[in-house]
Amino acid sequence: MDYKVVFFDVDGTITHHEDGSISNNTKEAIKKLKNKGIRVVAATGRPLSMCKEIREIGIDTFITANGGYVKHDQKVIHKVPIDKDLMQEVVEFASVQNHGLSFFTEDFCMNGVKDIKILKALKETLSLNDYPAINQLIFQQEVYLMCLYATDEAVEKYMHKFPQLTFKRWHPFVLNVLQEEVSKSLAIMKVLQYFDIDRSEAIAFGDGENDIDMLELVGLGVAMGNGNEKLKSVADFVTKKSSEDGIDYALKKYGII
Image: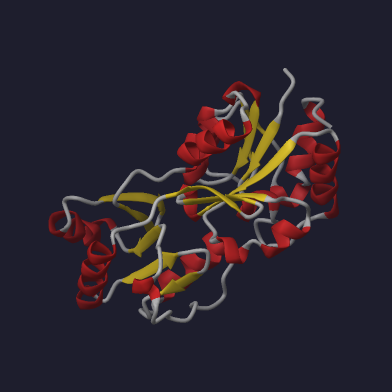
């Protein structure tokens, strides 16, 4: 199979799953893909503003906010803005419940609630060591994804209060708050349509539960050795850990580079 595009999750896939660094072998593998004319796309839970180091290694197409916002160079390919009035209702309810919410525009901020479990989740999912500052102008911007930091028991209150919303868990303490369906796989379909590439000609690498749908969608789905067990069960191949240059290993195994 002649593959034409590779989609990479970022945290724990492109980056070292423990210290957040990007190895030289991974950088070189991405460079080799581009030199062969194979498109390279980052598909991440991060907002675009937190993808600077990914842009620096040569990637210029980004699926961000777990699929809520997609941009190639300066062209917005896909976006799913949340209704501002509905968002305000959720914010007010979360404030009463003292639950954390995060907001994804091209940037990222939170509602000010601080909790050790929230900080742990931010470290694990976005490599953040602190709480991003509250953006007082958030209700004047397009927000493409909200995330709720809560247990299953707490989420039941939201499901009852907001039956028009979907709460989709992708981390033990984090859920997407969705007005319309948002996922990496839907965003990948938009990218494939934009570049006129069939999904059978695509490869995807990931490590988390929010990567399951994209690995199932493409022609070759690769799970990192440090990845989630559910993800590994649906992958076509489980490569080495991100700390062991799993991207480079898999691409060479399949003769892509």
